[in-house]
Length: 343
Ligand code: PBG
Picture 1 (cartoon, rainbow, N blue to C red):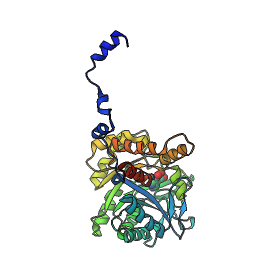
Picture 2 (tube, rainbow, N blue to C red; picture 1 turned 90 degrees about the vertical axis):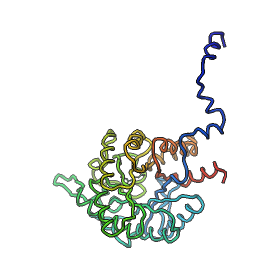
Picture 3 (cartoon, rainbow, N blue to C red; picture 1 turned 30 degrees about the horizontal axis):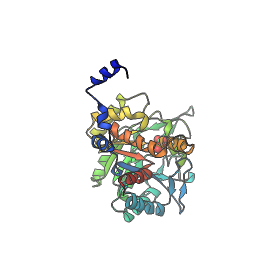
Picture 4 (tube, helix red, strand yellow; picture 1 turned 90 degrees about the horizontal axis):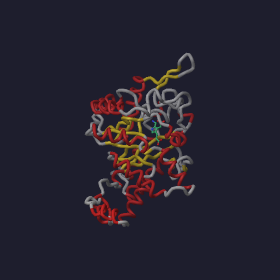
């Protein structure tokens, strides 16, 4: 070092690296924590007796009702995962224009809720409320076909259907209903219907800012639920918009939502941070199927360190302001968190 440089160095009084100098100090000053209690595991349940892997979501399964209950016992007991989010997978012949299978009391989701609650009473059971897995159009709501061959998703008719679906899940014992459809007014309508039936303890986690994202591809592959016609831009949000998310947040809060959500996660952390500043409600973020699949694919190719990248992506979502994270990586992350703690 020449003399001038050495003199300059002596003038440095602020040395932020002092707070990074050992693992012990780094741990003390870490601003954000990730724990298993922040993780929600999205799971798929189907008719029949077989549990089968999902090609587009490596590591995830389409479970039978018995299989999902057994798996929940392991998730809760061995890994400490405390909340699962259920999606129903139904075969083509059970899909219809109005998605009526969505509120069949003997359908695969209400049966799974009952089975999980029986096997692991303390597991928090959340269910997805939307018609797309049940709709022959692959749309989240009730569809009207227009003369020019296009389609339109009808808001108010859809809200009526979602209320039937939500009540069906709540009666079966769901703790949290999670409407992912983006219709206007569905939170208020669900709250009112639940309260009228005395189901006042059932919570609503609203997909408040759900974007019309191409990152849902692997999920739609898992459910066979891709739109048969058109897209979802008439109800899911434009990826260019952030202020609109705050407007949705205000409406959901006023309608009685207990928790809000931003989805997808990693590419929308600015929206998460804004939302965190504007609401007092707990905030969830969904790390969606495409985000998960990208990490899996890059890791399989040997291009990324799966464990390090997964944990960094989850910590970043927490840092942006998420209280809880829905992620397909929940079981792996739970295992890695255990290893870090040495248990
Ligand atoms: C549908 C729904 C979707 C997801 C959750 N609920 C897909 C969609 O809107 O088309 C996506 C989840 C994911 O990609 O992991 N109501």
